[in-house]
Length: 589
Ligand SMILES: Nc1ncnc2c1ncn2[C@@H]1O[C@H](COP(=O)(O)OP(=O)(O)OP(=O)(O)O)[C@@H](O)[C@H]1O
Ligand SMILES: [Mg+2]
Image 1: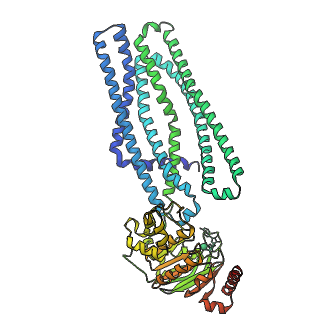
Image 2: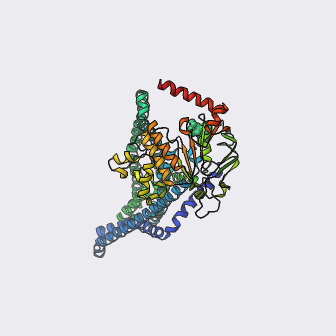
Image 3: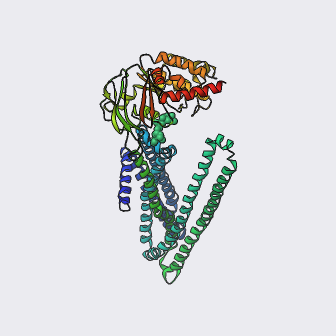
């Protein structure tokens, strides 16, 4: 592991560099700007010598005239250099962030359902949002430091050597001490910064949970617990911040003190013995200027490894996500295929992980086109899983599923999924208008008339038209301004709009009152004519008219037949039915 880390760090770096390739012209321009800006620092220090010796000591008229102009020229060059390098690096950096986000998002669109099952959504979001920024920011900061600051330091050192090699040599002995001290301070500073970041994460995590689960917190009187939990994290955050501030407040004067010690040392060295006579005022001030200009870039050069490491860590996690295997989709694309809706499961078996228990096993099922088939069984029997296997949300572990004699693996995912409309157990609405939610399968190009028709069929039109902006009303991220039953009807309308040969309804009417359920049932019966319909319902009254009822238990088909047949068979279904009928009778009494 440890031996692999540098190699993977390097490959991460190379991969990131690949993203800049396309922008190399701007990058080169920015680098030229950096070098120019660095050289102006050296020029500024160098100007000190003629300024003092020529203008003030010798009162040389030519120097006196040239000085202001030269100074202006240096600062003008510096301004140009800084602008070109800053703007150029920002340009390249933002372009890389843009491209990284595009690629991560594309990857997210292709990740298998299983990945989302085991990865918290927040984590994916973090990678998309922050890590792509961080990686590019770290890289551009590191590059700027490596080029601009090292040119500055080397240039200033060369100038100092030229001025007085004795002074420069003395400085070379002193420098490691100064730099070591400064590095120690910034290391301590970084350590606290990291701690604070961690406890900041804690603060928002607790707050986020309380905000999204506010009803649970209120009902279960979780306030004292949450208050204590938050207080603890908040207090730690407060203390860490103060510690960081202490380090911060000490760091800057301390750095200055160290610098002063260095300068004092140099003054002492320059004025002791007969060196006084050899070194002019200009040389001395120019030397000191160069020294003070060198300190900040040196500090950054020492810290550049930390910046790089941070960027590489973010890059590894980002590229880790990009390298996650996508949903397998090798099959050929068949143009405009529409199956008739016959479904056959042959010895289908499924488990979610190689060492997990079988959720479906030995399922053999033949559904003719246009049939309505109901899946019933206890909670956890595998009903939703069976539905999820059809559009390849989860892959079968054994056996096969055929649509019109096409094995589902032989179809491309797009072709396969075009055959289904699906209402899941938990309703998902997008933060968009009601109409856009219903017409989702056509994206932005949905057909208004068909949206209204679908809403009509799903018994949703009445309440939609009563909304403030009707079909244009925005529904919240979770459709918060709608009731559970209203959301379900929107989901049904979305499925009806799709007009696919196979309709799958997983507890699609569970949140509806008996009255609306009956209405929708009638509408579904109309719509399911000519298309295969798979229904999961716990309320058995809603599926009595299905062509075939399949009873699942522990992933196996235990009974199959029409309502009448199964009642007559006196098996599991009859028992379930009796139980529900009794409950209903008891409720009515
Ligand atoms: N994404 C998943 N990863 C791992 N195991 C899962 C996953 N989804 C379901 N399971 C497991 O598979 C089994 C069957 O679940 P499934 O959702 O198919 O049941 P169900 O018949 O639809 O139940 P319900 O009537 O409660 O909706 C359960 O034991 C469940 O723990
Ligand atoms: Mg289910």
